[in-house]
Image 1 (cartoon, helix red, strand yellow):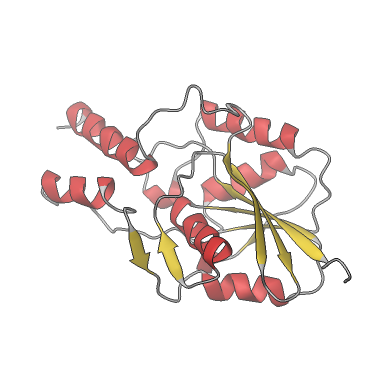
Image 2 (image 1 turned 120 degrees about the horizontal axis):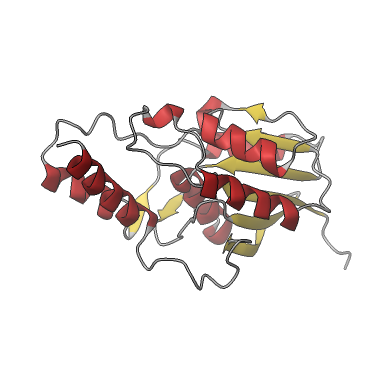
Length: 213
């Protein structure tokens, strides 16, 4: 029996940003901590020769990719943008809390978004190693597909800022999951909060309302 040939996908979430400091969420930039997180990822991946570097086109993914792979111009695929909840400023705080803190709990049926883009990437035989710098929900969709082979959305996959996931995929589209939510700047998650990403966003939202009542 011959060994299957597999290609490798490095799947990152963009590094840290602040969503409630006056900019529209689509335009936020990396914080100083975020740039350090991206630099840690760059150091971890320094020996990897990427054939493609793909982002969602939003500034936070492009900026992260440029730090991680400074010698390549990242591609921009707007179909891989994050799920957006719309303008939450006029909503009741209890509604916002439910949207943020319960967003990715349990198993959520997945619509067609994101996965056709993954299928198109896998159909391209012109690469062996690719880096995708995307977003929490998008990554969860891809990880869910990789882990189960099904069109489901497993919300329990935490995606820390600047994290790296490692996936191998064979010619038939079957995945081997090598690593999930690896954070080079804190490999054992010693300093990581025990809040989920969305719970942390809820706290940032509350803090911003206190600063700007």
